[in-house]
Length: 190
Image (cartoon, rainbow, N blue to C red; front, side, top):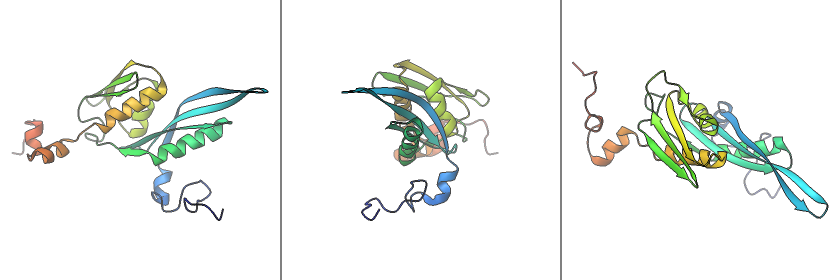
């Protein structure tokens, strides 16, 4: 281990000082799909497994990763590590839904994400549901158009989530107040 260029690692494989030890414990991971793949060699076929995992803290941070290995647990472990390294932060309205409707596209997969009123729940299919459960979204309505490939659906969902803008961000960009962007709200300060 003397020539390790990436730094010392602890028993879980995480580098020391990377996102702190406390940040790793509250993450939730969901296995989205597992796929058996074959490599044809001289003696026959060699089977391996490809896993797709979504990881999130249920408070606005989420990431996805894929891993391949000869055994299922190793593929899941690799995918989980990849997902933890590639996490993004998503601004949520009231901590439960999206700020606005948005579309995302990756390859032949297209997804439509819509903000929903309280009590709606997560109306999403398979791979997208895993993303929203680990993200911490409580109310959202989604539709997948085109490819039903789990990889394309998850990546299209992440493209859409990265395109979300909070009203505070838009107001700062335009040099206006948040109230001007959102319009009048029913609860006025009287």
